[in-house]
Picture (cartoon, rainbow, N blue to C red):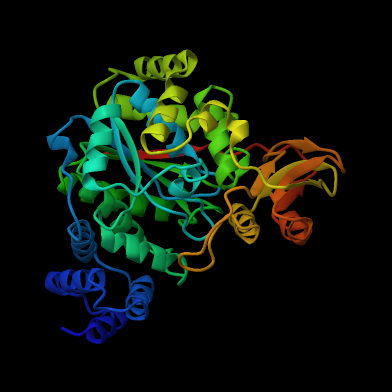
Length: 435
């Protein structure tokens, strides 16, 4: 086989065989196919798509590209939760320790930021010393000892996805339903948990811009999970504005800690507690929604939830004091306020544009492997539906220097739309897809 022929076939919408997809993934993982050829194939997938069979083949090939853990054969139930990404989405950081604090093991392999959306690994690495790259032995030891592990992609686990994930981020090949499904599910199959909750986002700040696309992606991933023997449920949730108030790695880490203490913003707190309760019901830990919510509330009130986050941070080499005292997390040297340019009701926030603005401050990557600044980002002082007077604080900018803070002001102002009449925010949870 030749990579150029497979690129040509995909470009011409000719389905690749299972053997061809296996070969392509294997050769790229072994660095026998260069990044520029894989980039071309990924772009052809974005333009031409993949059918269900080819998407499943790609998912399985990526999962088999490294070691497979089969964790449910060692500990069961063991759950995972994954979000398709959004702006200000720190839900996984709260849901994973919440569920573990309620007595259900959580085995999580997560990724870095893609495009304008932040990555869970990047947020975790704002904690000094935290190690996300774990060997198979370290992953299993941490999971068995602490009932929670928050690992990034390593050369051993789904390495094909790790390489392709980084490539997609910088080649405008993120927004593809088959590629998103294969990327997410390959990591899940490589771990081999028993239960998986997917948070499939749609809206201005998500890769899926409307609920129909989100439902297509959710249904595809639930089917892949079912075929692989993983009890998979997908919640379809809105990303019409940033989730919570913090956008940026250390800032979102601090907000996740606040959620675990019952002190976070209402919207993101509600979503975290709802998804934790869903996982408790999926595994049979709670018989119904009321019982699940009581378990979640108890874990928050008792301090067990935030203690579990500190425990896993310490287990993976991080400074747990930064969880116990989030003011110790890294902070940007410059803080500047952006004021409301007019009076009225906040009608909308262009979450994607706000995410891109945070990247310009250093919170995300424009090039593969680029270093990020964990300190930078924004704290929203108002959300959709809030009434403001001209001159009131709209956004707190966290920047590396005064010049960068000043340069982003006009871009930020364009992210906000206004109304003279009251505005009601839309629902957060639109649907739940079950097998």
